[in-house]
Length: 112
Length: 109
Image (spheres, chains in turn red, blue):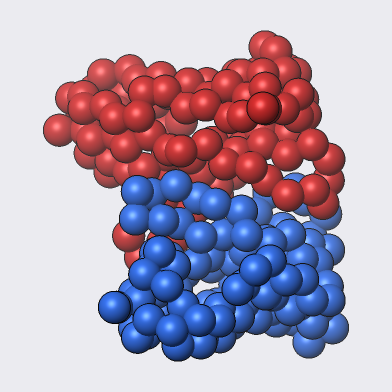
């Protein structure tokens, strides 16, 4: 079955370090998204991509970057981790405009 | 951007009771999704419902796009229904979803 996989599931790191969270989907979807989930805010969009070599900023993109070198993967990088980036991160994908998004199981990131 | 409001924010039910969760949105939309986040944190797709009514077992959803709201009905609730329910809609001309803050449902035996 097609799926979307995030790794690692949990990570603890220190402020100032670079961190990369992986997202891999086997749906062959064009569209991929990264969200963060914080108490009191629900899920907020960080970055998204509509296809290979395409990346766009979302609502809360400061301090994050993504790259899309193939259809299957959209890694999320925190260039210099800050304690405010402690959160649960979700990756999602969808096939076409208006089609439902499918979510990974999330990565819980703690920055000390 | 589009605003999404969910009500109530918290709901406690006795097992077997029925409930209705509401999602209001501030602009016209071409699709809407309902999700259940279980106690393990997984986001489960419940419904993709731009308009009309859909049913899946004890759950059903209705979206009235012209009046900018959607309702999620849970009948004969079970403890496994506990968790947070989110609705999400895309902004105008975009794919990316804007989420409501969710309704936290607790079903007690």
